[in-house]
Image (cartoon, rainbow, N blue to C red; front, side, top):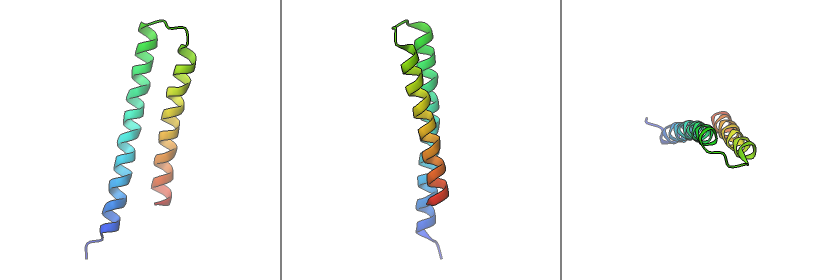
Length: 67
């Protein structure tokens, strides 16, 4: 029998993986932006981008472990 719950779990894990890739792209864009344009608050912006990537990875690990 085909288990719909397993398909749902796999879909959620793949969705979180795509979100981690998105967070990595955001980090790269922030790096390129701060390298090109001097705004005066580059460090907090970079820290927020790194925190976003870290939280996305933690969320993926949490979902992959406990779902």
